[in-house]
Length: 140
Image (cartoon, rainbow, N blue to C red; front, side, top):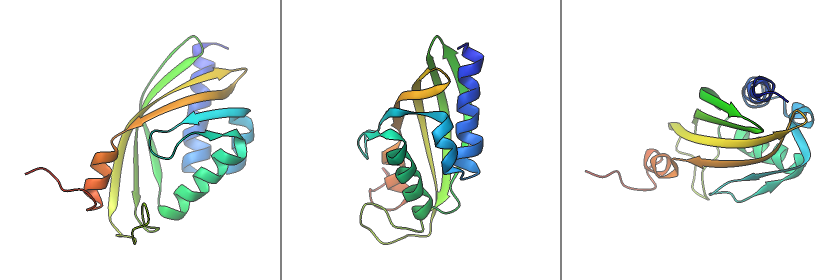
């Protein structure tokens, strides 16, 4: 697959899976053995695990939106910078909902094979999110 074809997979991820909420498109975007490494929630494996994670995200932040800020591709890797926004309606880490609009920024690198994401690594500003939710103090 070319770098442009691999980038097209990421555009579908954002447009259809994240923002249109079509979790069934995961069957077309992710390999059945896909593993996504996440520093907060731990690794998620397989399409069902990825769908469950997205359902949980939508339950916690029903107005969830992902913006694709930058994207670069080389070989079988695609790196992209993103911004997620959403209102905390489902609570976070066992806390009651705050009803606060939050913004989370991050960078993800994925490996794409045969037109599907087979592995991914997330890195994001969890401290900033916790500060927005009032869980962690903001430095003076």
